[in-house]
Image (cartoon, rainbow, N blue to C red; front, side, top):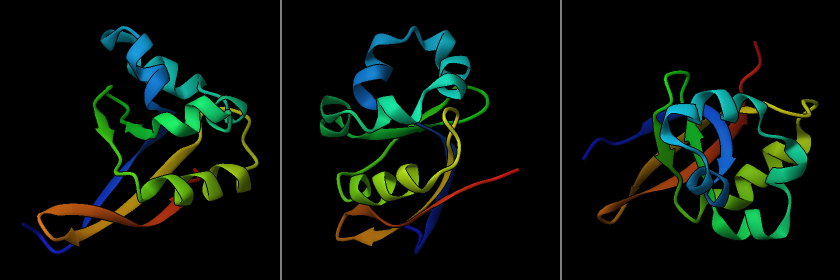
Length: 103
């Protein structure tokens, strides 16, 4: 296992991703709203990052409070793009840092 991994993509709650057709992940992730990401049932489901080409990287539960901080701090109403740093935690990877990516 590598020491550190960095992921980047649009944040979407997992409950929403389960409802989207896979071929629409990227398009819908760019429109996913800040308000939706902050809803209780969306927060409870956890989050994933969706890349420009529609690949999904589900995030570990330790990412949730860090993702919420970044989403709340964002000035964007939709299409919040995050960079996540993960480090080994036993046999799994654990999120240690989340920051918004601005272009």
